[in-house]
Length: 503
Ligand code: AHR
Image (cartoon, rainbow, N blue to C red; front, side, top):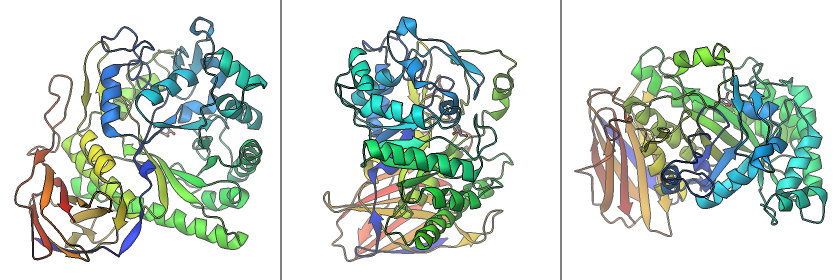
């Protein structure tokens, strides 16, 4: 099979917002407890944070982390997580039918963010609580000393405001599973009034309003229209979520799901434009894709806890998907979609970061390791910064459940002008045939391929786990070369590739 691509230096999509490589960490299962936090672990720092996990996060250069939920935030009292640990209450978490010791709260999370060099994106509870709680939390985090909340923060050990810019106005408020679920009109009004109040405190906050929990929701896409009609002038981003699964064990259909993601983004981008026109507004609102990942492997094993049959366990193993090689291809296609839609998707978070549907896994008292999907996320986060190019792609395709003529070649390209590099991320969706790719490099003075990484495996179901942590890893590729202004490479069947060229 053959595919041709044209990459022209001046045909650009957008400068990519680095924050599209963000991640999410919720008080859920072992994401926090025995994930990032495990006092007594041999690598723990003075705050009880695991050093091995922090290093894996630092390696990813995660630009921001969304916290503390998720469904968890919709019944969360942030005040439970401040002050002396011994005085913090154990609370029942209705979202995941667990209990939370509150040993980690905003101070511990903020300190951890500093150690892993990441920015905080915080969510306020608009489920069981409302505007007043939201403004108190924002003031506690960002307000000056000399006032009640700033002084309390100082008393609890932090005098300087953290100056958190990104604030999510609740989570998945369209979902009937949410504590405090609302209709679009109820939520839109509350979100707008909350946003207005937060802007009275600081007009420069970046506010994120809830869009649909996924594009299969009955209320989608009218939810976006109604919510934006209420909030258009007071928010900066609308949040979307999507999870991917191969329940039917059909790889071709599974790998086509990024087409559905693309349609979802397109539809919401159109809805944003519609409301902008209707409001005669000059303001731009963008998409925050603040939950995305593969999530299905752990569904059956989670039932007992989620249905309440285990009581209220603290930090049980929940949503611990063990990712396989096939998921590497899926995550590669998802990240390519975000790069190609970087004109409208400015923020995004892999959900989640540690243990819970996550690229990083830990064993309590033991190792931390990289799941298979760590690698495509790593490559995109480290080398996918710069300007996304508008590629012209001619690839053979196939018909799938979600779309027809899905190209076998899924590809994106990022030009980093400062570093003088052009980086291609490519997936061959074909299971048995190689793909000979020929890229015309136009407007560039192209040097040689200086880095080529390949992920491929004879077994789509191969996984990394505690006892075999390196079954699925990238290997240096061979054969990719630049000649006469053309990059050529042979992509093995079902492979993920990163090819970097000096320009
Ligand atoms: O990431 C797991 C859960 O998925 C989040 O808590 C929720 O927002 C979504 O439904």
